[in-house]
Image 1 (cartoon, helix red, strand yellow):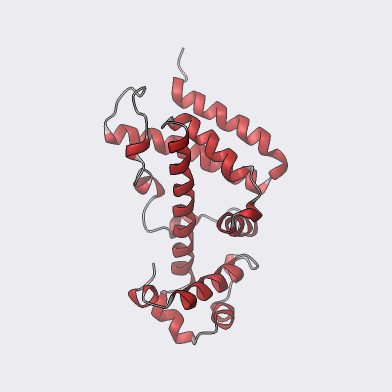
Image 2 (tube, rainbow, N blue to C red; image 1 turned 180 degrees about the horizontal axis):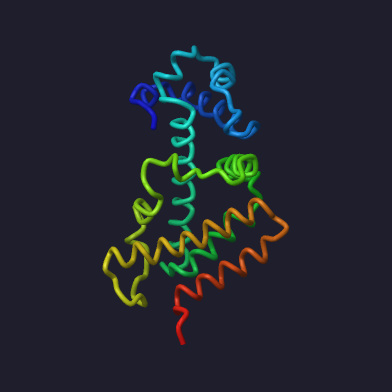
Length: 201
């Protein structure tokens, strides 16, 4: 992830750098993305890049954390609005993130462009922790767990991991194939029902 030097940069310089990175990562496949282009667009010396990040993988991990934080904030808002129903929250979050116009949301617009350019890339290997490990940060207080079989934190984490995996899969499919958004949502609803009720008679 980023260094303390990067965090201490003036906001304008930090924003200019991140915008340059996003521009490069959303116009070139990640394998072809160039640190030289990033520093040229950001108007910084090459040595400065390495004072901020180890390499472009490290920079991308930082940007993906920005996206994760944005999605988590959206999810938190959805939970507030629906009374903490963790099953309905998946559908509401899908509707908010996948069916809205990503051009109205700069973070999601960048995410969509990046994912379309890099289909099949395993971005989870770049993240410092498994997504499930930080899944419930800041969300416990909003979730209605009264209908779950157990409220044990590990059990809840596993249930939420299954729900988020279903949401993530549907969301990515809808972003990559917007014409199939409705069927992606229907499949998500089916997956949620299976998790909710189980698959045994």
